[in-house]
Image (cartoon, rainbow, N blue to C red; front, top):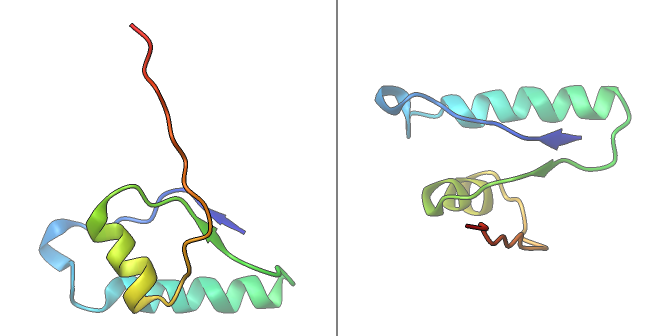
Length: 68
């Protein structure tokens, strides 16, 4: 399962809502027989959530170059 967008509004961040939602997604993924969940996180604060609170591991990086 890929998570492409996972955002909580600023006024409810760091209150546990993201973790609760993620636990529901994990239960859904298990029921549907997914073998893993992947997420694209591109901000430091988001990476901290995924690695520290959600116990995801970083396994790759995506790089880009904007053309002018």
